[in-house]
Image (cartoon, rainbow, N blue to C red):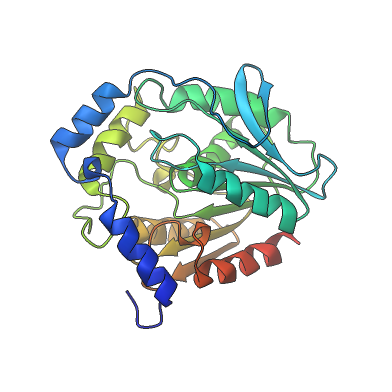
Length: 284
């Protein structure tokens, strides 16, 4: 980590590395993990409020009459369900940004794939497009989905949101920029991600823009804010994607956390407070 990295962030990074899932780095472990994860677990149980919309669960935070609406797509490498880190962050967004936040529980790999989630989210998005100041936000896999989704809705003539904000988006599930530095990333690993990416793509090519926005058309996308840590496995891919956004004429701001890890703005560290200030400037 950088010499300027806060002590709290260094401790957090050490804890994350000590608890990194072994399926991220070993082929037999990811194969075993995916083979056992073939059943839906049912609705996510939580102390937070959720509603049913067309048969799928959506967590909601804040007032429907808030000045902003945030659609938040959670991360988890498309295999792990929304968790309390996501839910607490959505609560923070609603309270600090005058926002009505919706976090859908979308279908996950390996039982489900991207095509199913696109169908579901397209119908859900149609319910939101009339809302004022609609912002699409997501972390990791959810962030990558947001970028792909905004590329996709152009093809079905749906309007764009007002802004896109993502944390460490997974923009290339083909992991085509190998070799990746799995050693320095305390959360993710190339071996596991490649296998998960194939599962999520289903019948799509892993370089199809619907699963890897790095290869998509970004023209006419809205103002975009992206965060990434320099010590994460996705960093170089995200850098490439930011350059693509610029080439396609998108107004984009890229904020890097020097020496920081994957989705650092969502952790209880000083650097996350600075990231939140940037988000507030974008939205308020």
